[in-house]
Image 1 (cartoon, helix red, strand yellow):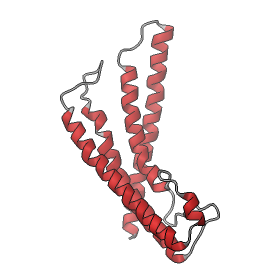
Image 2 (cartoon, one colour; image 1 turned 90 degrees about the vertical axis):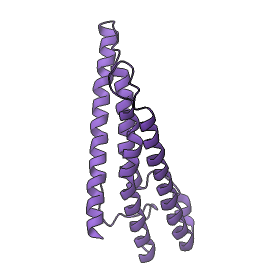
Image 3 (cartoon, helix red, strand yellow; image 1 turned 90 degrees about the horizontal axis):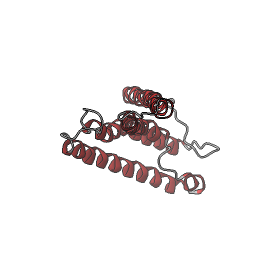
Image 4 (cartoon, helix red, strand yellow; image 1 turned 120 degrees about the horizontal axis):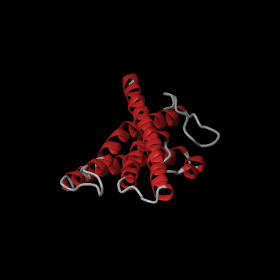
Amino acid sequence: MQWFFAVERRITRLALELSIAALAIIVLLTFYQVVTRFVFGHPSAWSEVAARSVMMWMVFMGLAAAFRQGAMIAVDFLMDVGPKPLRFILVILIAFASLVFLGLLVWYGWSMAERVQRQNLAGLEISIAWVYAALPVGAALAVPGVVARFIVSLRELSSGADEADGAPKDVEGQV
């Protein structure tokens, strides 16, 4: 099981670092857009489109870390006040719903990327499929985090460990 958590940590860490890098790129592109628009009076035709495209990648790369941290589906109140059997059922339902959701994102995201393959981004000679590819890639990278979160939550419930704030303690380490 340790090998799974090691691989999952690397995947989640990589996705988070890519998300952070994408945020830096968005800041630079937006700054460039503002300078060309308000300083030179001739707005860039491509930087706004590029920033929006990179933003999609940032969000879907960050999805992996968000799912791993348990930040996507908040049922803290029920987990805090509910009896142990309810918490056990909630953990299973949350993991199942998350995996179904991610599976749908992979399936339909791939389909959308294939469908728009021949279309280009406005002002750029780049296929819009590269933007839509963020959906299946980000969702696929989030799956190991959901599984790891599920395993850690089940371990905590079976050991009876409860945190004061209701958030599960990650015994395998943080991202």
